[in-house]
Picture (spheres, rainbow, N blue to C red):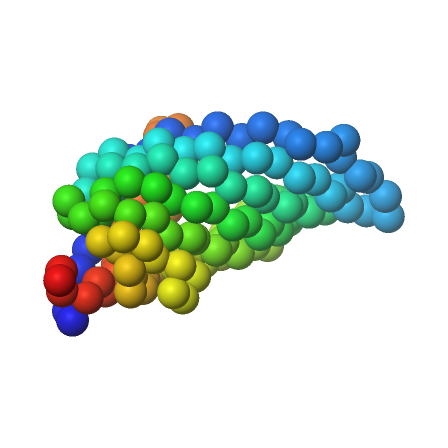
Length: 135
C-alpha cells in the first residue's frame, strides 16, 4: 500500500441544533454538519459538531464526527472522519483523521488524514490516505 493524495473543494452547511449555553466565560454549542465534496472525493457527508467559544477573541475549540458516503478515486463506500480543532487567539490547529476500520464497500481498510483550507470564503480539502488494493 502506498500513500495517495486526493484534493478538491467542498460546500458545508452548519445548522445549530440547540440553544447555546453561555456561562463562566465560554459558550457551548451543538450543530449538524452537511457537506458536498467535489474533486477526487465525490461524496456527501452528515455529522455532529460540539463547540466551545471563549470570551477571548479568537479562542475556541470543536470536535466533530462525520460519515462520508460516495467515491474516492472511483472506489465507492463510506468512512467516518473525526475532527479536533482549536483556535488559540487566532492561531488554528486542526486534525481530521479517518476512524480506524470505519471504511465500507470499496473503501474498507481506508486510513488517512485530511487538511482543510479556506480561501476567499471557499473550502478546499487535501486528503492523504492509504487504501488496500481492490479485490
